[in-house]
Structure formats: C-alpha cells, structure tokens
Length: 309
Length: 291
Image (cartoon, rainbow over all chains, first blue to last red; front, side):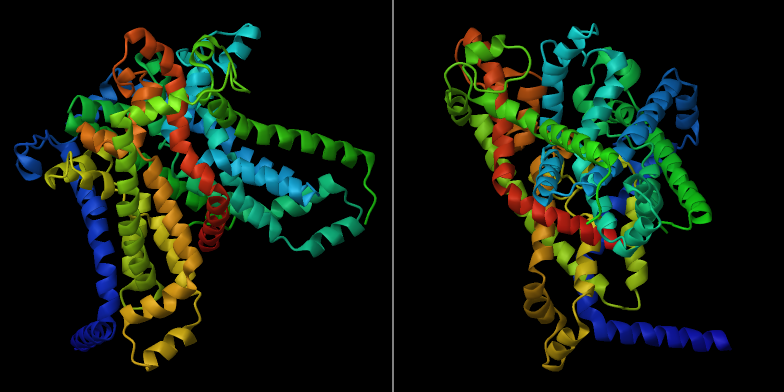
C-alpha cells in the first residue's frame, strides 16, 4: 500500500523536477553523452579481456575464454619483470618526488624577501607547461653520449651514456618527473601554508620555540590534512606510472628495467594487435589500482581522520 | 621583530642558495635550447655538454630551414586548428556541465557521481581504442580532438566557481522572465571571466602538448600535429623534418633543427607565460578547495 503511494510520489517528483529544470538537463545532456561514449562504452568493452576478441566478430560474437588471458599473463616470463618494474618505479617515484614538492614549499615559506620568493615560484612552474615530447627530447639530449649529464657522470667515473644503461633508467625518469612537477606540485602546499593561523606562530614564539620547532609543531600539523589527501590520490595511481614518458624514452636495450605494465599493454595491444591479452593485462592493472586507492582511503580515514571519499 | 639566532641566519643563507639552484635548474635546459637554436651548426654538432651562449656567430638559418619545411608547417597549422576547435568544444561542454551541476536538482548527485567515477576507474587503452575504431574515427581529425575533449577536473572547478555566485543575482534574472540559457549567458558568464580563462588555458595547453592519442589513432601524415613531427625529429632522429639537400648537409643541420623545432613548440607558451601562470595557480587553488 505505502509503496504504491511512494511510487506515485516519486513519479510526480520526477515529472515536476523535469518540468521545472528541463533546460538544465538539456545542458547536461552533451556531457553525459560524451562520458558515455568515451568512458562507459570502454568500461563495457573490458569484457574483451575474457574473450578471444576478433575485430570482424565484434564484442558479442567473439569466443569466450574466461580467465585464460589472465592465467596466460600470470604464467608468462614477463609477469614478474613487469610487476617488479612497475612497483619499483612507482614506489621510488613516490619516495623521492612526493616529499620534494612539500620540502620546496617549506623552503619557500621560510624566505622573507617577497620578490625572491615570487620569482623562484614563478620560474619553478615553467617546466610543467613544456610538452612531454620536448621534455623527453631534453632528457635524451642531456643523457646520451656527450650530453651535459652524461659528461658529469663520466667525470665522476660512471658510464658515459646514461639513457641506454638499464640501471640508470629509473633514476632518469624520476629526476625528470621531479623537474617537471616540483613547482606545480607545491602550489597546493603553499596555499595550505598561507592559511595557517599566524597566532599559532606567535604562541609558539612565546613558548620559546625557534624556527625549527615552529616548523615541526605548527607548520607540519597545519598542512597535514593536505598532505594526506595528496598522498591518497597519489596512492590511487600507484600502478599508473607515467607510461607516455617511458614510451618516449625506452629502447629494447633498457626494457629489462624500463618496461612496465602499461607500456607492455601498449606494445601487445596496439603494435602486435593482441587485443584481448592486452586488455586483460590492463584490467589487472586498474583493478589493483582501485583496490590500493580504496585501502589507502580507508586507512587514512581510520588513522588520520582525513579521506577523499 | 624578534632577533634571529646565528643558526637561523646560516639557514637563511643556505635556503637562498638551494632555492636559487632549483630556479636555475628549471631554466637552464630551456636556455640551452634557446642558445642552441641560434648557434653555428658546424660548431654545435661537434659540441659536448651544455650550450650556455650561442656557439660561433649567431644565425637564424635553423629557423629559416624550419619555415621552408612543409610537414613542419602543416603540423603547426594542424595544432592551431586542433587547439581552437578542441578548446571551443571542451569549454562549451564544461561550462554547460559546470552550470548544470552547480544547481541542486533531483538528479544532481547521481550525475556528479557518474562523472567523477571515471576518475577512479577506466576501461583502459585497448577498449577505448576499440570504441574509437568502431565509431570509424581512426585516421580522422575527430580522433585527435574528441576522445580527450572534456576533463573532470575542469568541470569540477567550473562548478565550484559557479556555485559561489550569489543566488540573488540569478533569482533577479529569473523574476525578469529569463530562461536558464539566458541566465547562463548574460548573468553567470560575465561575472565568471577568470574561471573561463582558467579552463580555456587548461584545455588549450593540454591539446597543444598532447601527442599520445594521435600516435595511437592516426597514421595519416597530413593530420599530424606539431608534437608528433617533433617526436620524429627530436627523439627518433628522423631527418624527415628536413626537405631535400645533400645528406651531409642534412646531418650537419640536424642538431640545429632539433633545437629550433623545440623552440617553435615552446615560444607561444613563453610569450603567454606571465598570463598563463597567474591563471593556472588560481585554477589549482579552486581545485584544492573542493578537495
């Protein structure tokens, strides 16, 4: 009885809402359609990971193979290498480039001369706007034989060509990530720093705290929630290494350390046309990503009382 | 003003040194390209290490070669075309979506979730490629512009900005009998110039710099944007960027041309930089309020 009343009321509300706001729904329609075509249709397309996809037969007509693509991948020679490279690159990047922006913001925060502070800040955003192709071109120029960084390495007794050396590949990628994102990544921390209540510093001074103690007891707690949010978001991309950069920089000589899951997907799927296998590998990657994101979010909500969702 | 201790003074000096070094590290690679692009080609190809001043007598020969090159010029024009159309399309959809989501309607929350969910999970490269292929967009200009036309982040900052417009302004227009399209056009947009500038820049820069989707979806050289031509010249050391001439001369010019092409890609950004960085910072700030 009550449910029929609710239904009519629900229907009535829908009708009234639509009659009043049809123009707004009309405005939202193109974006809804766009997300449907370029995001939700591909999500539906992941069923190809469980098929032996043939372009001529389409998504519905291709033969179903269940988890075979996945078991093939787990059993393959490449699986451990790809997993190791992906995780190592990603964790090393997290360890070095995540704190870099925070430290940069803290250092800037200590500068008293406003002109100097503003200039360094403005210059530090510059690399963020340079295209990936140009950045990789520069990286290659500096790290190939005779490049500026290779010359330094040679003078210190290291290898004379860094870019083709498997043991140098990850450091090169991480350093260039830091170069690109240091300034841009610090914007959010600088804004968080400026919103810390100045009275807290005054109180700390009265208690006899020097600059260092003020940083530990006032500044860091003040930006902790921003750090946590950024960390959770970063965790959610743990398996999404910057594959565009790797594709531009790696070569068969460095596959041993440079080849990650996403670049493998790119080669298998788009260059060797092994669609289903590549889609399965990619799906494995995004499922792990989403799982890590949810775990990080849950841990943060529990222990740091900050969460993304 | 409290007196600073010796330790704090020493720190202040070190701090200035470190920050100056960071600033230099950000700018030197670009300076290297600027100087490289006007150097004497002969000296430049033999040079090792950084180029901190133009080598030999400064020359614009490299740029002259670039402007004679048809595939490079076509790439440049293509990029401009993609930036204009892609930005117009992206900004239009984003403004509509941002305005729609700034209203409290019955379906606002499900629609917002529908959009933000795509940030957490996506189908991946291969299924997206299949969709583009099934839409018969491979090897068309559509494939370069459409699949990455809209960004969730831009929709969210536009929504946040529109939601902060006082309700009274909109209500007044409504009482005067204006419809939603009218209100958006003549009340909301005039007071939202800065957010429009922010998203326009975000889209324009993203399209100017993008290469990956083109590399996947397009093999027709006529449609290539600048970044793909750049990739051939800078990273794959192909001399297709240089028309004709005898091979030795082409080899000689290769390094010079590399720097000139890099500069051609960066110069528009450098010219607009003071404007760009101001709006970028405010965009990131709006994004961070939303969390």
